[in-house]
Image (cartoon, rainbow over all chains, first blue to last red; front, side, top):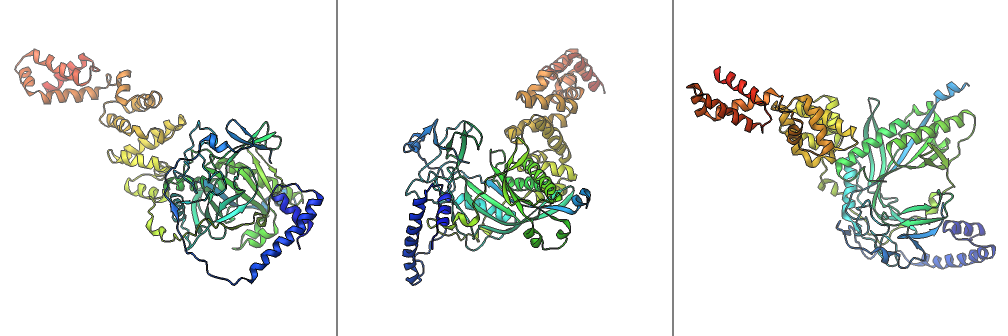
Amino acid sequence: MVDHEEVEHVASLARVDLDEAETERFAAQFDDILSYFEALDEVPEADAATELDNVFRPDEVREGLTQEEALANAPETEDGYFKGPNVS
Amino acid sequence: MTAQTAERDLSAVIGLEVHVQLETDTKIFCGCSTDAADDEVPNSRVCPTCLGLPGALPVLNEGAVEAGVKVGKAIDAEIPEETSFHRKNYYYPDLPKNFQITQYDAPICADGELAFRVDGEERTVNIRRAHLEEDPGSLQHAGGSIDTADYTLVDYNRAGTPLMEIVTEPDFRGADEVRAFLAKLEEVLEYLGVFDASRDGSLRVDANLSIVDSKTLDGDDISAALEDANRTEVKNISSHRGAQQALAYEETRQKNAVRRGREVEQETRHWDESRGITVSMRSKEEEKDYRYFREADLPPLRVSGWKEEIAIPELPDARRERFRGEYDLSAESASKLTSTKQVADFYETVAAEFDSDLAATWVADNLLGELNYRDMQVTDVEGRLDEFTRLIDLVDGEAITTKNAEEVVLRRMLDDGLAPDAVVEAEGLGKTDDNAVLAAVREAIEENPDAVDDYESGEEGALNFLVGQVMQATSGSADPGTVNERLRAELDE
């Protein structure tokens, strides 16, 4: 059972503000969602398909984005920075 | 119990998490440069991967893994058969993906140790693990301090810089030990060529400190005593000196609390360097709140064999010992001359050309002393090795006095960027030096046997010719009268 408190805790970790009604609604929804995942318990265990290891990139510089491109989708910017609310 | 006995009976127990930036050319999971120019603009060394844009995938930098293996070798750690990456989930604007890629239950290095000296004694601290992870971006709290700022400005240039987090066992008993350990760790990392201490923010330390009854430290297993004691985690330490100050402060603060019968609260505290105190931070997530899970975009690493394949340079302790034997140096000189790899390399180049004692005096005492006085490093003069050996050459050949070399030539070389011969000429240092004149006189005699014959057969004009030769050889810095006298003295002998 996902309770009220657990939803509030998860919301605070995600820095999301929920009101009383939302918390109730999400508690019920979380329960449903988690129960879907229980279906996975019935799937027999199988070995992972691939056995990749040691996948590397050489330590060589590749061109990235310009500042303008990097900031293109930001809702707010200032002097080349992403601008966001105060955090502590 | 009086305050004094209480003080004596209490002891600090400290463990460290040291984050060091690894010196690679590119970030750990993308090809963006890690080379931060002083005047760079924000968000100019970024790409979809380090900005956490949808669909971008991390690919591990081989150089970062090599650096990690080198660190493991240097601290005598085990490189496990298989290591892997996890996601550490937390929401903060310096983390564009809302998780940090790090290593959790399978770090690249386990069970190492590092020996260092403090107060003339050798100490060894056990290193529980060392793992690779990515650095977050950097934040500016605009319009005030972290608490009072109006808004936050975010720069992701630093995001994705490879970090190694080195976690020690709680083996430290005081702030002085921590400082000495950090200095030694930096020295070793610099020798390995995987770390640059001069880079801003290249070292960050979190320290756990608790106060226990000293008696409980006598046994081998102190875990029971630590379990009973609350600890604080001190964050935001960025230098050896900062670590020493922060932990000395925290030790006193906790001892005072215990002495007054108050409980130490288990919490995270922030080192405020400008005020010289630690302050309580709002409670942070517990470990389970980070919801660690495997980073499925990165296959596991199997690099235990690299420990054999990758060579590391001679480390400071070994080099110090070799210097004492090979160059017959005192412990103090050997220690100074191996303080950084650059100094040691510089010394060995000089010692290859001159007497090892003379080279030691010049590098360890004169050069390092003058550099230190000017807040310069040996790396600032690395390109002028030729000039420096020329200076020793001048002293060694007695062309200038040691006093002039130390007090005039070396200083002007550093202050004005002049070559040693230019200083000698500008200051007229060769003029008063009889030895240089004598050397030139003997050379002139040896090279002009005809003129000598003429002089000996009574031709006074031959003497003038020889004077001219000497004046030319000394670039006119010799006094003609003296040259005349010396020539006669040598020829008449």
